[in-house]
Length: 281
Image (cartoon, helix red, strand yellow):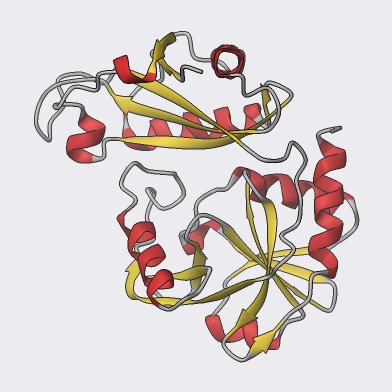
């Protein structure tokens, strides 16, 4: 079956998509992206993704496509999923880039976009059966500035942290900010549980403003959990009951090991149920 991409609102067979060599996302990382999960042929949490897209475009000082709305992107995504036969669960990447010439100074501030889809094995969120092992990436720290909260096309710190985790035989690595506090993991926000109180790094610690993070803050607060957005040091993880990661593709994943500490997944299991109920799967 032929695979399609959506390039600037048009379905194009994947081999026929031609990204020019002077594309600014390629040359300078001048763009951002959204990783979106779909169910039953429709994207999940689209309003939250669109809200973050608007913030990202504002930070990077370029405009979204002139007809951009949540419905506009939802329609384009649904058409792509239909064309690719990815009607059950799918992973989507929506890349948005400044569509201009120039060198560091762009010729204009218009944007283009590209949407890709890949099938997932499950339509429902499922908790990872085998817990993850994680450690701290200590070679490079993430700066805290207005770029920190967006999913920038410049992802070098996440790539290097992922390579570091591979070298250490970990499943994931925690990324520290410039002050030595936990910002996030390589593709997820970080949550810890201590005595049924849930803590997560706040946005001024340099973490990406994750869509699933936002979903969890809302759902858990509604369920009566005590939520604290705060600063966390790596050593804080040695005195907690549970650690889990969140992103839109996996929902939550529990960590079983950090240094000598071992954890279980009582709260994580409950959260998977809450997320699935939230989207009425």
